[in-house]
Length: 476
Image 1 (spheres, one colour):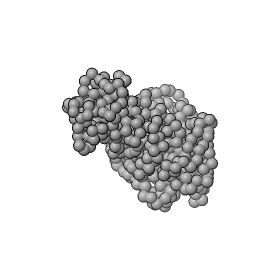
Image 2: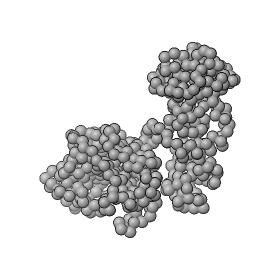
Image 3: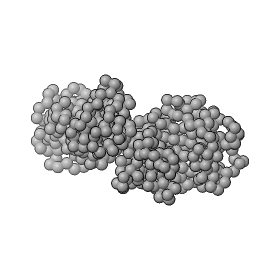
Image 4: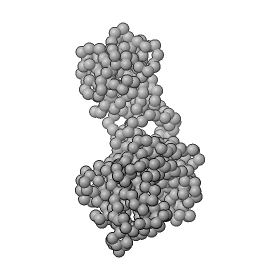
């Protein structure tokens, strides 16, 4: 593909400095559409004695009485049954190194237990808590490592939902924690969706898609914002403890159940918005879907902007500002921007011609022509000439559009992130080659296999590239 180095360099620059609108693409989930123990390929079960954290009263076990999947739900059941020799028992699971993300939307649909002394939580911790070092005050890596609480609730105030983050400089023992809350009246009677949307510069909290709190990265360093590497999900139901038992524990309400319908982790699926300029110097207009598309506009305004959507199988679709998709009309008539969904006629192959120029090939094998702006555009040309050549300008992200969305998708995960010495790339082969670029687009290191020593790199932001797919990381 032409101009690959220029394209990738421009991608690096734009990716670092432009805020992109995002859609969400499912990365990992458990829908709990099975019965028995939680899926071991997705979950780890914590087995702890009482008092391990927060002076909680329960023991966490792997007994089916405390932890099971049935009737389409994960059931976490807190009991007063002297199980395993302890008065109170419950369940706690985590998705460490199995379901995790750096940034994205993380959500779960949950029905809460209620009852004086219950303390249910849906939260996140890092895969590698050692990244930001040991904390002598806590005798562990927390809170240096960071913690994201998506949903917490206590039974004595059961209609109040809390969302928080903790870090070395901002956590509850210092009284500096950053936390918000909202009231939801029926959390024990009905299911609700609890979620965060986590970005590089902020985190938003939601209940049923109603945003109630935001925390921003204020640029004061990792002590305030260690939320820039892989975190996993935790679900648990505690009994008592510093918060859950602050007003006592009712000994007569047990058992109590926290029911989880699903857990989902989404990653951002970038949407690039572009304008298309024909060889006549005019811009393509969607005509708001009301008539044939024309390449005759002197400037790129509303109707002249299109979202570039991944149509699968190495093809793209163009979505107009009316929310509808461009159709090739199979080359039989003038093209329209009036389709509700992406089918064969709405999928195009992006042919990169270099220097921001490209052509579009329809599913009929023919190329789109601007018709020099004199009539409605057609997808009926056998070869690429002047009228079949377009120049794109992006209004959202980068010149990567010419390559990235047309290539086969490869997921790249790296850890730890930030990294000091050894960077790991777990989901590649030992024979795979990767390349690290600095923020200026210069190649600084080539890697073969699943890990590499990056200790000699200067501190800063880098991108690891494999087969045209990239992952940003921070070297410290």
